[in-house]
Length: 182
Image (cartoon, rainbow, N blue to C red; front, side, top):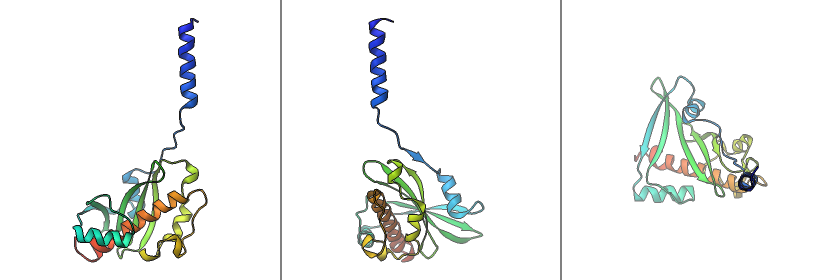
């Protein structure tokens, strides 16, 4: 083996050994997520919402977070013309990488389910599904660590991000769908 090939192999070995680990994990596709939310037989329609400035301010006040976009999409699950619920897919940066959640509301706007669709931070920072259960059926005003929501040591940032996403979705529902101003 010549000296040049040895140097190249050493450099490649060093690059492989020092490459940061990849934690990206995608659990469900969008189609799989819609099936989880509404079942196999439901039809799913996309509802695009464009809140005006007044509505955006009201949503931000309810959600306790700044809106990053002026357009939101809800997926409306229906069976035989009856609304089964609403789902939103929300991505939010936890530390430096995103978590993507599907947040499902009942037809009345109550939180029914949260499913992690993708998580790109290290797996130990991911909140378990059982943690999300404490959020179900809570009012948007009670969706807070100071109001009885338990945190998780080691997953503080991802649980905060999840709560922010849930409040945002519930705020959009409240202002744009429940109040019928879409």
